[in-house]
Amino acid sequence: AGDFDYFLKIRVGDMEDFNRIHGEQLIALPGVRQTRTFFVMKEVVDNAPLDF
Image (cartoon, rainbow, N blue to C red):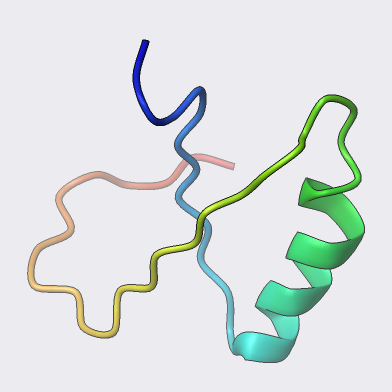
């Protein structure tokens, strides 16, 4: 009931990193038929820390 089932925020160092993650990991997941990618070129506010 909407355009997205999942929304991921991924930070990468460059486009090569993104292409590797996208090609080797994301689209290789079972059940993934389609992805949409949006890039943020400049971050205005980042209030939430990322926990790893």
